[in-house]
Length: 435
Image 1 (cartoon, rainbow, N blue to C red):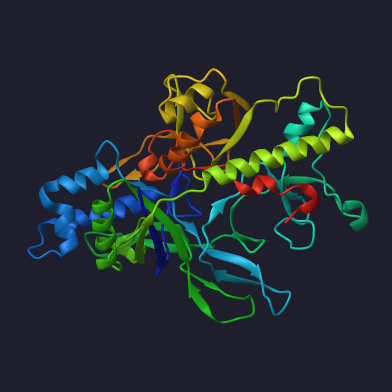
Image 2: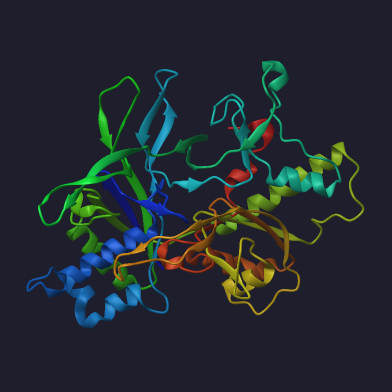
């Protein structure tokens, strides 16, 4: 499988709306994979009647074969969500925070991550963000309560309470950086189509993602906002054709709504590489740290009679995007062992057990530009959800989990829903080493 890495540079505000039940439409904090997928597919179709298309366009549009394989086949390309690559980091020459575009992959913090209620965020050499999954599992196994409070609150004489801390982040050289993009409202007036002038009593506002950011609060150097995404394609030749097409038309794509009013102008740059994952390494490190943490808890509290780690192999599913999950034709927010076996193509694994699940839900809708109709309201499992599984068949699941990290879980995975990461490494950030 090939991965086409995308770098999306915003040149105008992006009207990426998240339609919820009712009349409320809020701006997303990222570019959904469905928006990237729709923009590329729409541009291919627009060029299909050109007399002299480029070489890459001819390859994609020939007899509709490659286009159908890419968007409508049994194994279509997976368009992952595009997350902001603008990181907040500490200036190496001073203690002030600056914003900067980074090259590292942008990930989603797990739902088990927490930070101080009164002073949250990544704080090097101070109390910052840490994960509670492994410690909470060990505490429950030893039948003792777990209190994820600020260990330095007594020294600081501050509030010890913590609360969930989510969002986007990246990691480099031991430093964690939070990612975000700002938004603003654009006020517009309705136009009378007969008189081509402003219409009385029609005034509305659009919430949009900003196209630029300041590197420092006191500076004047504005930089365009950059998003990073990826497209997963099984066929190498098709992946190369798609990469060439994107680069040939890098400035011709429009994302989101209100494109006829100047919104959504972007440049998309593509680079193809092999889709390689380090699932095996993350699995090994996670199980090793779980065993070490269990021994630490056993040295403080009386260990239980039955050790749940004996002959068991643990792994987590961490949602990196909202997921559309259903079991027995009903929407759900929990991935059961039977569902997981279905996702990876196994008939059954009697030893597979769901140890714990941390998830929440929301409702989403949208607008289908091709049909000119509203999309159905879907029950979404929010990104960041964490599912801890255990099994005694390690060799059986290793290859399956590697494939699952590329294909995703649930429905509409080709649109970016259901992206997962196996054993997110942030689970190894414990309270005494908060980042």
